Length: 123
Picture 1 (cartoon, one colour):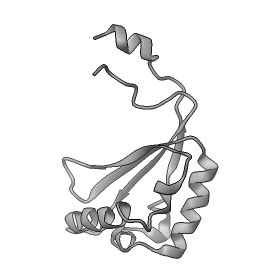
Picture 2: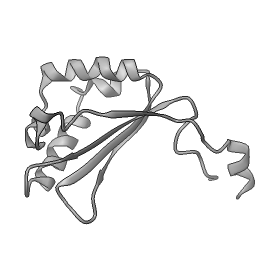
Picture 3: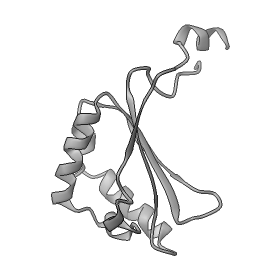
Picture 4: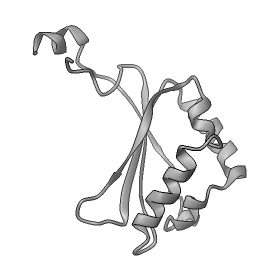
């Protein structure tokens, strides 16, 4: 299989950069996966989610995480975030500084992505 671009030009990434309460990293991952892979997660029901997100854990600080995903619409992602407030998944309670906006995504537009024909030629 040839290389594929990480994201498509014109789409958006949501990027969360946050910490969990000290020593709760493993519990956080478990609770996040329990919710994320369940039928209760409205993110996975949206046609605007281009690629499923990934959770990254800092290799030097196990209580520090990043969550990224590719979407076709920032507005749709924000709309679904409002739905999640009513659901209140368990994993959220383990995030530090929620009252200070610690789990609010930044959005970035994909402005450059290697065209597939270039990736195919690199094989």
